[in-house]
Image 1: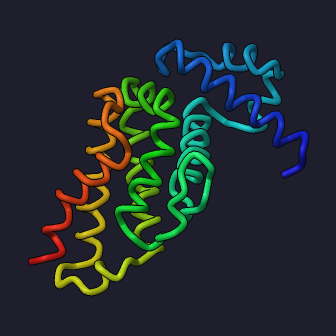
Image 2: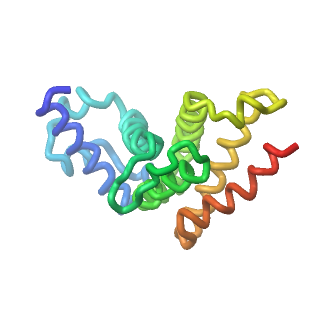
Length: 186
């Protein structure tokens, strides 16, 4: 993406995130985003056809980083054991904690279902792509397991966010592991 275009896109996304911090999604109008981003109407629509498309792009950007491979990131380093499911979960939860303001805002708005469905889809895609050995060796159908694991993960994150992220990412990863580990020991 050309540098100027990328910068404009980032300005629109940043303006949208700032508005989400103060207003419910359904109360934000495109004109407010345009004004906050300091772009023209046609420029906005060149990047995003609708406010829902902007929401999807914001989620895509958020999850692209949250669900990427485990690396050393300064505030947390899980790169020593990148194939360990508990490490992967902790890593994702650290990023979600960093994004909690946006996530909480999205969990309380009219587009909550869009956000949650996109989250589930991205998790399924990531889990399928990584194809963990525990999934390959299980007697139950892989698709069924992936659906169960992603569904319970999304519900766990939703609970954690609604309770103000009081538990650390490691504590949440432990609770999640306690919940899903029995699945693999049938």
